[in-house]
Length: 164
Image: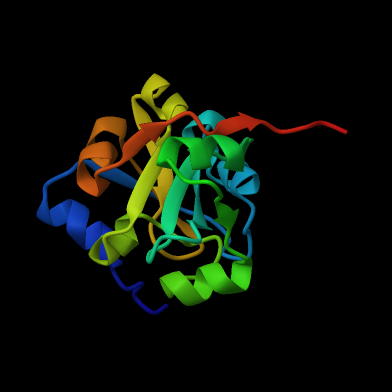
């Protein structure tokens, strides 16, 4: 069996001596809620990373929120002081980040210096689980370590999913 390569996000955490756990799952899973189930962790601790664009801004932004919630674009726009915010399509998100949907990670995109906006519910958790930068790999680390490392701004942008 071939040795799995070490991801840059893991190298970064190791270099900064930030305690973390790596959780692997079937890389064919792309839905964050299914990822939470696959790694056996509570949905409120597993965070998805969404790429959004503000028409008047040069760079996209990243919004991190619990996998069992949806992004409220109006509240995000208000938090950014923008008139409008739009989610990037899957194809555009992949083109902008160079990462596959399901593997987009603020940890893997630090060099881009994009704004990172973390939903305030994260502050209720001691640890969060985020993508490591590729499908099939998640990293669990202390919430405060993630906030410090990626310079997150805390915002109230997640809302409960509508049930049908």
